[in-house]
Image 1 (tube, one colour):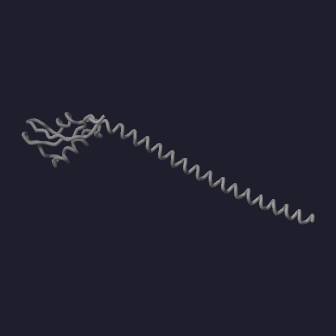
Image 2 (cartoon, helix red, strand yellow):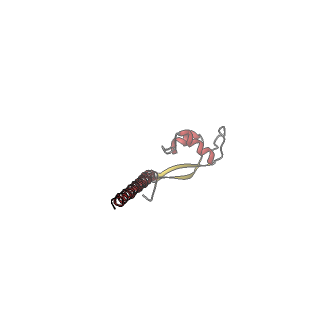
Image 3 (tube, rainbow, N blue to C red):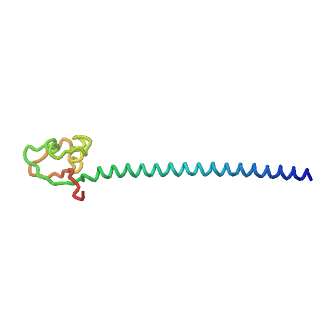
Length: 127
């Protein structure tokens, strides 16, 4: 009977040991899942704030287009000086956009009396 008690005790210790190992595995799995979920939430929240910040800054001004009459002595540079704003990288990028909109070549001269479409930014009326 003493041997049965020892065998049963060893069997119970074996079961307890396996159960402890199983619980450790479950805890480790739960920890990994929690870390992954936390990482995803932090990423989503930071992305949301980043895009919200960009949207708030970008919504203050909107791009509009205007048709203007070319007068004698007007050049692409003088028109750029009048309508250029910091939303473009530099003055050359603005002049390039005006040229692309109006299908102008670099060497093409502006003719007085013709019309030119120019982009510019205004305050958003919705704000």
